[in-house]
Image (cartoon, helix red, strand yellow):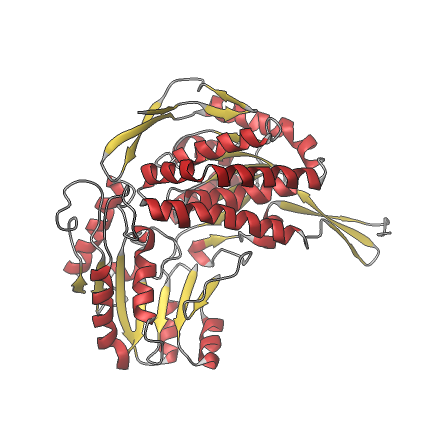
Length: 475
């Protein structure tokens, strides 16, 4: 059993003020794999105080010194790739190939994107006779999720470090092991004491305490829309900045002239990471003349998705993260069946020959209509809902018929139509024809998918305040 009950505060590994153990469960085995501590107000206060004390000196540290430390962190992250991958495998059920490549790789990819964006980022510039300055906002509380642990830690911690902020990280208590490894890396890299702090805890405890803390200047949160609303309310009394990256119910609009791999590509993208991605294309909307063929293709693609152990190599998907998540997904699959959607592939229960672990069958529903629960609710599992549309206008209306607005997808070989539809979709991101966004492109959404943007120059600016100074023109 891995014992990781200490917090990282003010450059030291310290015991919690009061013992409060929590076992981390390996979702592939349903067995305890580690024990951590859950912090409380005294631990939160100590971490915030350390970050507050460290802020003036860190904000005044020359940029090249901050960059050098971040590059040192990168070296350590690369060297300890296997340790990080194993932590994510054990805590959230990512199979080794996924953990070692996509999950681990997201961190270094974002780090490189921030360093590239920094080259053209202007901390001070002229606006007529005024001088404009971008200054670090201060002490940042960072609350990260379990589904893409290092993706989100790097999207928050790296830009904050580069612009001169100090921080307290509260990772998900379900999947804390990777953030503990990250804290070890920060310590080894030699960041000054108090610049980076980490306290494990739950949302009701440490999460709420950070959100309401008068000495925290900003909260950056990634997680559910429900939790994002609670954090916003907790932060309101201190009027701190709140940056939210929340849920999604992405539409994948497939026109009849889409390329031959469009449906298969959409199914695989939906199922990746066991469907536990806020930007997954979980609503597949297909032009009616192509719909029947698309349903057949989706069925074949879903049935080809392999589910397997997290300790074995391969491109299979693993379990979902917890019993709570497993039960929620099972309930929504059952609801889809009861409400009349056509079950095309998968369904209730674990895959065949699997009797342990939170494994979900890759599932496809057809003939899903807007009044159905699975059309509207974020399932956060390997479950695809298919619907048909008759016209371009109807496709846009259906795609926008959601409280979310994170990522939508378009598949057509007509470039004019592709751009025309993309401009009408109410989402922060639109990906077309299977082309991913470039490094540094802003990540974030409309509506109940949150506010703010992460990544690249937008991510750097997210952690800055803007100051205007008159009477001191640029030389």
